[in-house]
Image 1 (spheres, rainbow, N blue to C red):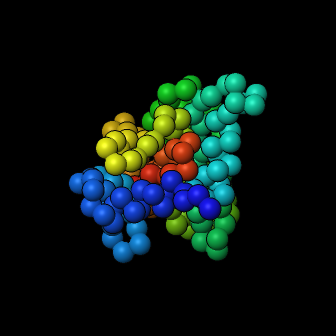
Image 2 (image 1 turned 90 degrees about the horizontal axis):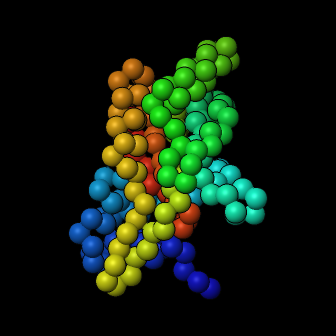
Length: 170
């Protein structure tokens, strides 16, 4: 049985081969970004990055609001280019719509989850190491959004190689 890419990254983190990879309990971090395996929702979103049997490749994004009572509200899936998917204004407008829906439900917002795909390749071996971490612009958008929101915002990049990189702004 072949080891998952996440398990390989975890082994490298435990061995302290790369200074940027750290472990805290069972969790793996790189530059303060949590690295984890994709959920079913992450894999579903990643499938939307490949249209016409993989001929068209583009980043996609979706926002999910986790509400009290395990209720989840989802935005539409936004489709971008091979390198980019959205901007601050688009994300803010989608979040305002979801906030409105949450108010109609009368349920508290536990957190907002902004997931998008990264289509460049990740690799890790004895001599080389490249991960598709959240970019500076990804993190800056989340920081700007958090200034005006009183609930946690989790931003995540879903890499095509089976890794998810996320950071929560509380």
